[in-house]
Amino acid sequence: MRKPTIPGRALVYIVLVIAVVATLIPFVWMYLGSAKTQSELLRRPPTWWPKTFTSENFATWFGRLNFQTFFLNSVIVAVFTVLGTLLFCSMVGYALAKLDFAGKRILFLLVLVTLMVPGVVTFIPLFVVVSKLGMVSTYPALIIPFLAGPMGVFLMRQFISEIPDALIEAARIDGAGEVRIFTRIILPLCGPALATLAILTFLGSWNNFLWPLVVAQTEDMYTLPVALSLYSVGQNATNYGVLLAGSVLVITPVLLLFVALQRYFIQGITATGIK
Amino acid sequence: MAVTRVAGAGALSRSGGDGTTRARRRRMTVVAYLFALPFILSFAVFMVFPLVSSFLMSFTDFRNSDIESPLAVKFVALDQYLRLFENQQFVRSLLNTVYFVAVGIPLTMVAALALAVALNNGITRFRTAFRVGFYAPVITSIVAVAVVWRFILQPDGLLNTALDAVGIQGPDWLNDPLWSMPAMILMAIWRNMGTLMIIFLAGLQNIPASVLEAAAVDGATAWQRFVRVTLPMLRPTLLLGAVLLSVGYLQFFEEPFVMTKGGPLDSTLSISYFTYNQFGFGNYGTASAASYVLFIAIALLSIVQFRAFRPKEAP
Image (cartoon, rainbow over all chains, first blue to last red; front, side, top):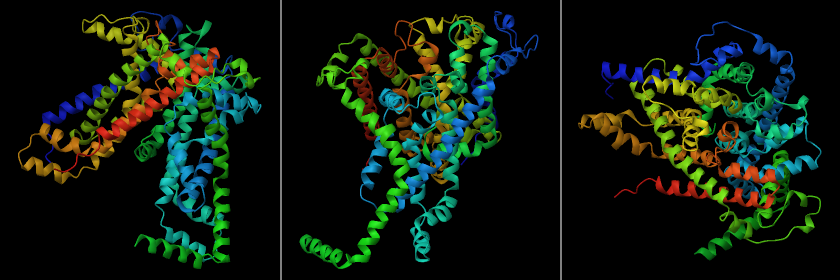
């Protein structure tokens, strides 16, 4: 294919650079703003580079606001949601892809249908279930409901279907049980799919806020987004510096993870089409 | 013919149905269910049960006060659904959602497609850096994003300062009922174009270069190649993008929840937000009916899109 002419290509670069700068401005503003004083943040027109750098906004989070607890909660919830999702989805994915059982088609159909169900449909009955089980303000309430995600099942089932039956048959003839086949043959071959699922689940869990906002009712159970969203209403709504510092603290871990693993993120989206 | 085949199949399964095969098959079913059990249990309790309960609730006058005495609940058939369409606020939220979807989806798709085409054809360097940059908004928490966007959209914030520089006086985005929705759409495009860009980029890379070369040899201009070759070949990818986006955009909720609380004057109240509020008021029946209207809308729009984008039959 003919490549664009030199001036044409230069134009494309210029447009792309402008577009990417415009896209990233909110981030730049957030990072610079988190180091500004309250009076500077109130100044109009807005300043770009901080006149005086302050670490006070972050000090507020690490001191008075219990950042360590929220961060730890976010990590615990995300890690266990990821581990549980990987385990549950790969197991049921194997059953749906390679084993025969009555009800298999119905189960898969149900999974497909629930892919389209809007979150708000199940929201309150889910809350009633969780409170009847006495799980409000516990880690399980923040983790277990997300282990029922249809997206992961769909992803693992599709991926495992591609594994040749001959591999499994050979292992069966050699006398391997299903558990052995699953742990020694299927799981090692599922690396890319598991990586994708892990990343997507981690992101979803880390950024999730509506459900945690409703079920984490005591401060010791708040995750980072919950703490930030509760702080951003009411009397603190105008503590701009602290709010920007909070945003930095929520966003930076995933941003670092993304830059480090961006290849796998991209693979994940193209594999599932779901963010 | 058919009859003999069926009979033959029956004989075959009978002859194969001796004790060991049947035992093996039964064992297989048990093993399969053991593998599926953890998921099935959580799926049943945390997905299927809530889904069915809200479906049933949508045909009743269930209120939060009825949780302790469910027997007092009356079956009202389609009343909730009918009254929903007489509810001015619901109709408003429906129109708002249509507005958001009808304007937001084409704009997001065009932005994402333009970026994908530019990254695929126009440039050779820094492709990864651009991709990371455009995708970064997707991975960030909406709560954190809201903090920054409130600064951007303030009357004297970043956006209006930039508009001022080119001689336009920007509105008070979040407090003007006319401009609140465009502001939400702008945010949604910013947050979602990265995902679609990646999907479109993958689709573009699957178009064989030879096809485009052949068109170029035949004298097609770059624009003709794009419209006549690239776009038709990208059809399945565009469909995937449109369906994903509409499933997401019809559930429009997070942006107004963190930015405007549905206001001003209900101008950014979506169906999801209306439903969420009704749950909050304890009107579970109404909320369930509204949420199922949304579910049906999502299913319908997906079907319509699959038909519209279906590959044209060869003449």
